[in-house]
Figure 1 (cartoon, rainbow, N blue to C red):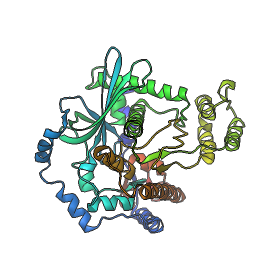
Figure 2 (tube, one colour):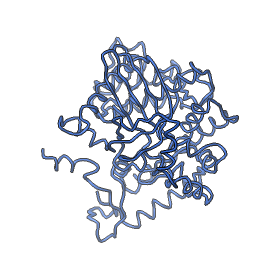
Figure 3 (spheres, rainbow, N blue to C red):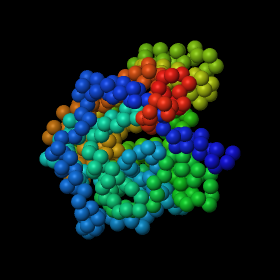
Figure 4 (cartoon, rainbow, N blue to C red):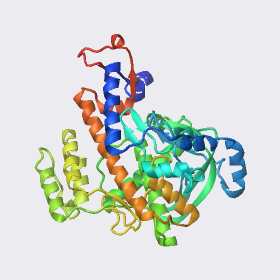
Length: 437
């Protein structure tokens, strides 16, 4: 297969889904309905936009001034990996291998340098709780004029970051040391997931060795998580997604362990209760009754391992049914100021979010707590707010996808490829639905 053929088969190569203006109008009406129902704020108040624009002035001079107070990591090899249509890049990685350890750096956009308590942007972020990702449409938590510029780890420019430096024992991958500090980085490249996959296959490609090392480490971390009892509902992830997901999980775990064990402070912990034994039994019975699905006898002691084993061996047509059986009995994860109970699905005793401060209030608040070593007075209310707004966002996304299917528009195609409005007569639309794939 030629490179051109391979590219044509990707979401990037296929181009956006094309829709007629009447379909675009229907989508807009549905969005407005959902915004009203779930109190989702689309546009930003003038004061918030003014404040955001003000923080984008004299960026490079501000970064040069900050070098006096930060670790200078600009000579380190750093890269980002995101979807093709990503508008902001809030996490980047670096990795090294030594005789007895791996060193993994996860660099996160230092949003709390620009957005902090007392500012209009902070108050607005609290109102919104998170970014809402509807297929083909994004409702941002932070003004794009800030999030997509000074807070985005774009390539070939100096940026302020919050770095999590993890020294991992080579045999167990457990933490030897964890260091969290403010830094200045200089990203070498912005890769899409497809480009990252291609780099892994091409020994002569830039960053090949670093990306290959990051995948080898991520795959070991992934396998270790499964052995430890972490639930993995998507067993067929590609290598690029494996790298990012495992590195971010490790960084999130490192930060919240540091907050709990080294500092003993409250934070926005992510707590996921476990289903009752009867609920797990119900899910597992539903799974083993599926055609072609079996659960090995040695994995029944831990329902999470049983589900992992079923997913790995099941025919592809049954994967969604297995996932649905599990999700039906899973309680909703929530934010709490105490990690009591841990994260059942991940099988982590302590867990929280740190790696996405551009799009999640919880991460932004944890950045503030790490740096200030202080806790907002209204932390419990903030935890409840973030939990509620996440639930609203997920419900709105589900209803929007349902509506798209009702009008014969594939939400998954739109999610991965984007959407473009064109005149009806320019559509290659055999079904007369006003949609061209």
